[in-house]
Image (cartoon, rainbow, N blue to C red; front, side):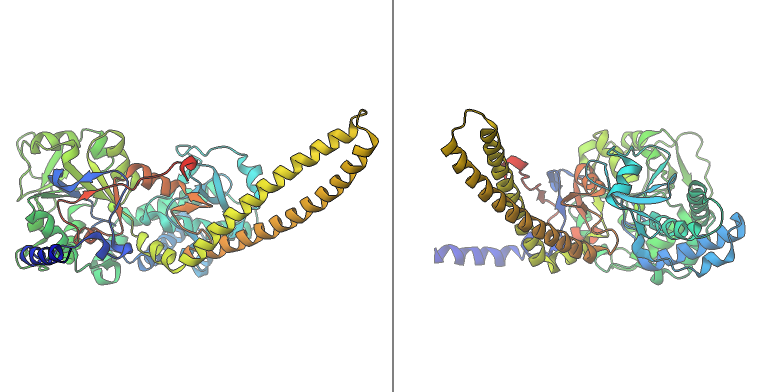
Length: 503
Ligand SMILES: [Mg+2]
């Protein structure tokens, strides 16, 4: 076998170094839910916010909360004192749901049942939760509930939790529904009227993560012959500033960010881009105003900027469709779901939280294994209790039987006594183990987030959010540059997933 190794080394030296997945740290890997051959992908599209441009979440959240509080006080009549409250960012993770009627915020499990739930800062007990939501699935489209599914949306949940707590301490009946409406209106105003974006534009390094490997990753896609396009909901003024900051001058061959992209579409209004027929409009990159194009746009060209548009016209003009396109975004509803449900483009989801989720689970690996073991033992113990209880029942029945003779009766009485003692001992052990499982589970949970645990899990299974990532994103990763080390021809394969009966 020595000869083969020599030949392999020779070959390796001749062909140059290739990276295999094993060299990539787990937190920087691209994960696969649905098989995808990168060599069949001809075009790759990118969302901008939270996809190409990652934000320093804590700073952006602080800014967002500060500006929203300003609007609540100045425009919506809230007292100045709400500015002095501490708004702890840990009160929100992606995937929590707001109940506008009761003033609660909760997490959903895989099947859309309510998991842990807070009213203000107080966690509801099991009974309170049951009284409020019975055992019903939560209908995500009901107006009573608001699903917090973007990182831009996290401040809404933080402010709602904090201000519900505040409102409960004021006189009069708290108007939970109005409170959420006011927060959302104020935050939307801050996003729309440029208050938020003008602060970010004036100090990009404080708010936007500049990833030094991004240009390299995009270049690698291009050099393997793929075409790239940008499709963002942001308007051109903001897009140009952010993209310049991220990419201008990062690589010699690409002096401007525009050099990386074959088509640039801003103000895309996703998900409307995917399910409505808005026209493409060409805009002037200096004035941001629409340019009159004498009727419908027939061709998307590299040196122009487009706004609006729709997927049907996009595919007609580029001649590229469906399985040949990979779209990379961060928003389940805006970027991923529609594409998946209508079997259009392939999708990859950028999950900024993944880096932290993976480092926490790496750090707690031993404890997570302990938990699994403990959980398994607990289950075995419970089935032993079930078995013995069944035997005890049979003994009862035999003792009640008038035909059971006296000597057998004595024997059965003895047996009954023994069984009762044994079941009691098993129950005590099970209770102890139950408490141990709970406390270990809580400790692991707190390492992810002290109130909510991991955003991808709830209890011992996927959270609703984790399940959506699972169901709708073909690939997922923590940042776009993670594609860099992989071959542009890579065949991403989903791991084999056992069903419960196979484990
Ligand atoms: Mg986005």
